[in-house]
Length: 205
Image (tube, rainbow, N blue to C red; front, side, top):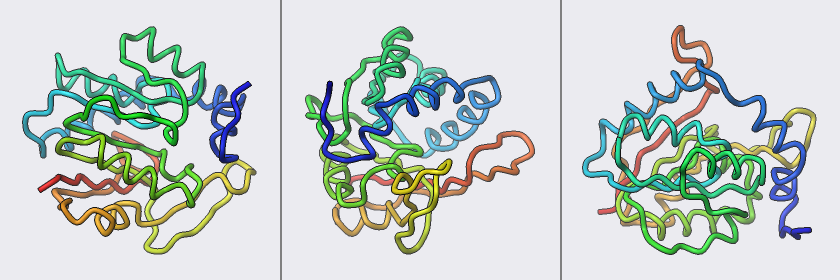
């Protein structure tokens, strides 16, 4: 049995992560992701490789496969059930925790979507550095935003969801990054509903 350094890692590797993988699928989510990533891709140039940290079953990577045919797509995933789906669908998979990921080659775009909010806050600096080192050009952060760090209950669990200014902290930590674009995904969008996520596209100078 794998031993994890944080309770959040064990939580997502467990049955809770299996259940999350099962319920997060469907045509409506796929359409919303195509809309979102289409906006992001339009603000980039020459993206030939992508790495998603916390890819789950690959909904985001599927959208990017449609938008950027032929691009090399990879995901890091801690949940075994989700990782097996990624493999089945032809993505390169790094199995295990983001906190243990070793960078073998930099990618043009590295991103998280609804993942940093579930990382132990004490481990965030390591993840910020990982994202910076793993990216040769762009970093995308799509997460719940709050100007100051705050914890909120997540499906009855404590210590599992945190909101803060992830992009701002990354910009402060790595001064060579610059903000390219940002926006908001609204749960009441009439066509492409997602969680209330703020997104930030950063680029290395």
